[in-house]
Image (tube, rainbow, N blue to C red; front, side, top):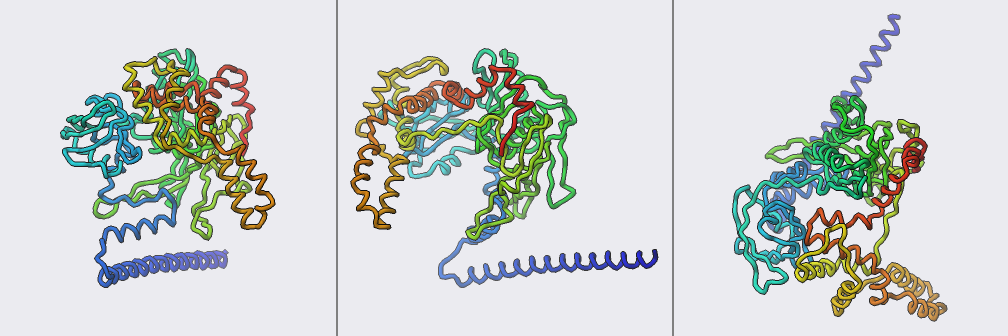
Amino acid sequence: MKKTIIIAGIIIASFSFFAFQQANEKYFEIAKNLDIFATLFKEINTYYVDEINPTTVINSGINAMLETLDPYTNYIAEDDIEDYRTMTTGQYAGIGSLIGRKGNRNIITMPYEGFPAHLSGLKIGDEILQIDGKDVSDKNSTEISKLLKGQAGTKFKISVGRFNSKTPIEIEITRQKIKIESIPYIGMVNSEVGYFHLTDFTQNASKDVKNAITKLKELGAKKIIFDLRDNPGGLLHEAVNIANIFIPKDKEVVSTKGKVVEWNKTYLSLDQPTDLTIPIVVLTSSRSASASEIVSGVIQDYDRGILIGEKTFGKGLVQATRPLSYNAQLKVTTAKYYIPSGRCIQAIDYSKKKEDGSAIKIADSLRREFKTKNGRKVYDGAGINPDIKVEKLEIAAITNSLLSKSLLFEYATEYYYSHPKIAPAKEFKLTDAEYDHFVKWLGGKEYDYKTKVETELEDLIENSKKEKYYDGIKDAVEQLKVKIYHNKDKDLQKFKPEIIDFLESDIVSRYYLRKGEIEASFDNDNDIKAALEVFKDDVKYKKILTEGNITK
């Protein structure tokens, strides 16, 4: 026994020595490389032929270093702290409007209802010309956005060009605190089905979701569509609280595991749920990420509702913010998160890189099987698969061209100023005569495009010429060109329903802003159609939750 204890002591001492030695070696490497970096910068600053900006050079070095890790570990300089705070809280002081670059013009694209931009009379389509007398036509939308923000209560003048005005219109606006709505729409799709869309997980998002559920039930909702499409995520605790709305108290929502063991934590539902029984469909897309995946994953793992749409993004990483010198901050990935079934849905392994530096997706062969509460198979390593997959339809080349050239946007603006009012958002439809007017309006406007088939044919021609086969297929290719090359007039009729959908949405937004735009989309939204279809059949709904098999 004594001999065994001595041997064990030697082994422990050896491991301690090696651990101490390894730690010392690591600290030496850190100190050595920091010293090299500092002396290198000193030499560049002293001898480089041109004057350099120290902040720019150092920031480039910091960002390049962080790029070797993952896209979510970021340096936040003091000057960018306000933008970061806006992103996480949804709050800032400004006018409350989205702006965008259309061609070479800066345009008001969506004023938020009830905020200064809207209340002062700014409209979708207004071109921003001057701010406090200074020409801003050559600035980009990011620069203009910063100029529009400022201290709450401060006033400034904005000069805009408007479609029906020959001279610029000058408007005085008082900035105020803006809280961006995390839920831009709450309403009924039909007499039984309620709908709300959560756009991000900022502070109080869980309170907003709880209020949305309560309001929809007051409106008569017996079933609910919870839209998480394109939601990039946000605050972890808000995700936990939102999941808690639908599952019993004291259930595991998510656990985090990382290098710092003391930070590992399991998050439970701490409150009584708002509703445990109302049928739910959660809509997901390929851009639903992070906190969105926690909530949709919890709903799926507990078989609390059905997921419809696309496979989610696959971000199973958790970030924390750490303070740095001079009021800067570091947003750093500290852990992976695991939803109740035990799976981590992280799709990319940033610890392994290809020769070109790009990260590697987790191979299907390495993905593991887990089970939901009812025993349905689910898998880790690649986002969350919906229970009912709805393929995302590719829009036609002509529609994409009309959108990218802002021609649908421009026509919607013109339509607004020639039609004082329209039917309610859910009822508004363009007539055939109005569509014909739009087609006529397009005459002479530039919106050429290439279809996918045309591009592939051009690639075939180029490759056949390189490989000396073209002369043998030239006649066949020329005949094929005649058949497949696009004709604008024909495409405007062939893809008329699709173009009308986008055009109606743009027109409705002029009259009813964001809420109307969402309502107008209900009839043409394939995900919502799929949700309504599954809600029609209670037996099918329950069968999916008990027997449905989610594939990889």
